[in-house]
Amino acid sequence: MRKTSIFGATGSVGQSTIDLIRRAPEAYDVVALTGAGNIAQLARDAIELRADVAVTAREDQLPALRAALVGHPVEAAAGDAALKEAAQRPADWVMSAIVGAAGLVPGLEALKQGATLALANKESLVCAGQLLLKTARDHNARLLPVDSEHSAVFQALVGEDMAAVERVIITASGGAFRDWPLERLKSATVDEASTHPNWAMGQRITIDSASMFNKALEVIETREYFGVDPAQIEVLVHPESIVHAMVGFRDGAVMAHLGAPDMRHAIGYALHWPERQDLPVERLDFAKLAQLSFRSPDLQRYPALQLAYDVMDRGGLSGAVFNAAKERALDHFIAGRIGFLDMADRVARVMQRFDRDDMGLDDLMTLDAVRRMDHLARVDIDSLL
Ligand code: NDP
Image 1 (cartoon, rainbow, N blue to C red):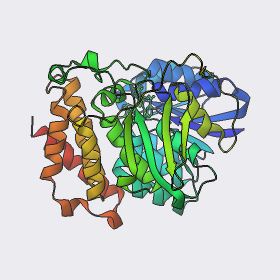
Image 2 (cartoon, rainbow, N blue to C red):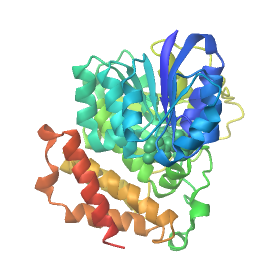
Image 3 (cartoon, rainbow, N blue to C red):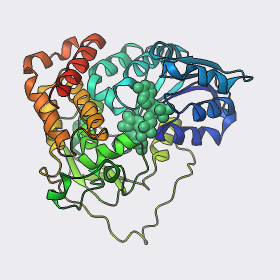
Image 4 (cartoon, rainbow, N blue to C red):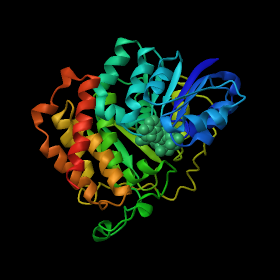
């Protein structure tokens, strides 16, 4: 039995992971499940999967979690320290599917105890990529991509030499507003931005898809995972979301990864890696796929995308600043304090206000330095309201 923990178990990726585990309960010994506000789901899954511990990130929710677990042999815990402690419990495979920078510490702790970390939480790689990769190396632990594009690149690279890679192309659906007139974007509402044309995902990543902040994070994630130069990373709008990524090689060959838009593919690949096993995902019917279309992203429509290249150019802690500013901009948009297009504008202004030298500290990337930058960026963007 594989000892398994799921951080962010109550979310969209967490629930898809549980769906796969539930199909073969005899294969998994569930150590920890975590959530935040959705206590009923957390308790239900922890009881069903016989988890050792259920953790809510919200301390005020501990009494409710305890009450929901009464009579069942599952420990209840709450708060950041409890999340950290749960990640320190020995596990073979850990899913990192908390949303936002809050996923960083549990991810680092899981790597420190040598677990294989399936990383959906792209924000942690963006704000502290070098730290995560170093921690994995130091502890002989493995980091596996779960984002569908990065899983696709990872699969296209099996057996290949990175020196032969010319370019990596990740695709983007274009999100909710890909066909809206630019003028209308200013008044886009939270509800409108929360509907994705192809993927069923959590609200935050869905809005980030509409603004392409999500793709900006993924461009940076591509650089961190695969060590390619920013100039080798391309983004293509592909409204059908069937081709998730392509890798171009020096001989002109291109390997593309195709699949139905269902996160259980990428999660299942990470769960069973290096093997492939049966997955309950739709099989593509090529005769029915009317077309696969591609176009270059319009940077006027998606200014967030350009910011990713600025972040990579600066390096160091600029990813922590970018991610924190982006998270707060999204909070402000959801709360109705700023408009849809203001998000990219405010994040760009925060990036400009931070001294390039302050952020160019690759060698000194510590958790404290990342947290400090994260905090300063959040305070800074709040001052721009
Ligand atoms: P959801 O919003 O659906 O779920 C987020 C999870 O994190 C929930 O379990 C939530 O708990 C928990 N959570 C929220 N805030 C905190 C916090 N402060 N501390 C600890 N836990 C918290 O997100 P998704 O599943 O959509 O996304 C999760 C991650 O995976 C993100 O990094 C996203 O970018 C990435 N990702 C998602 C994809 C998708 O298809 N959804 C695809 C590729 C990557 P609760 O619900 O109980 O409040």
